Amino acid sequence: MKLLRVGAKGAEKPAILASDGSIRDLSGIVADIAGDVLTPEGLAQIRAQDPLLLPKLDAGSRIGPCVGRVGKFICIGLNYADHAAETGAPIPAEPILFQKATSAIIGPNDTVIIPKNSIKPDWEVELGVVIGKEARYVEKADAMDHVAGYCVVNDLSERHFQTERGGQWTKGKSADTFGPIGPWLVTADEVVDPQNLSMWLEVDGRRYQDGSTKTMIFGVAHLVHYVSQFMSLQPGDIISTGTPPGVGMGIKPEPIWLRSGQTMRLGIEGLGEQQQKTAAYGG
Image 1 (cartoon, helix red, strand yellow):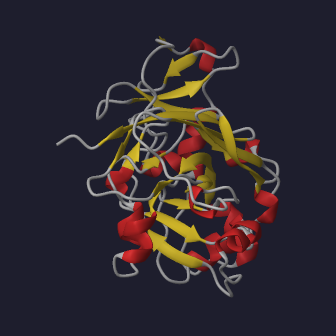
Image 2 (cartoon, rainbow, N blue to C red; image 1 turned 120 degrees about the vertical axis):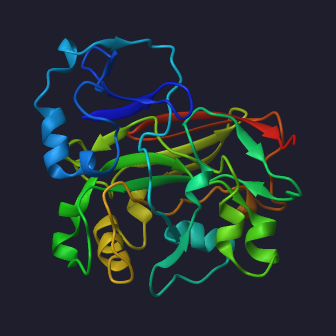
């Protein structure tokens, strides 16, 4: 299933993408694509419906973040061998964890605001893992049972804030609008192998990132297992699993940073595409 949330900010309706490409209203079935709706029982309730019998929503409506009421937005740093190489960093011995503020979350095509005092804003296409069942001290062999599905994430970053303002990655990752997710959550049963998905990102039509989840250092199962050793994971939590090479910071001979008025397009095989305009902070 491809689940999404449609409507104005703060008033999104839960929806499903039907086989004919139309967007169908799930609000008569579930309250939101969030929390317990993402558990195996909640997804089974949606799966029992015939989407073509549900009310059709306007195809031109805004698509919101594909998951509502996200509790934790956990990110993994330097998790692609080829990305670590482009930054000159050693391969991590264990996953690098940091948090991205949930207030950064926006819809997949909403405007990205470059924050006040920004010097080095950057892009990162990432595979997002959406938790569907509470995970606490989970064994790696059982980790995938806790995954509801996957989505595209643009883990936008302000590198000056991230690396030159006291060493706290969270402060470089958490600006408002720095977490587009969606367009939809693709349930785990539709993703045969999350470690074999092509992914890409373009800025103003120029492709900078063109990679694959094959080059992840720590795969999805390991990450769910690993994170659950330090904190419980709840339905609706998101793990953003790292980015392939091609970020602005790694471009030679000089880095390239985002500017106001640009257009980012990005996508992951089978998970859809995003497109965002950039704008300067205005108030």
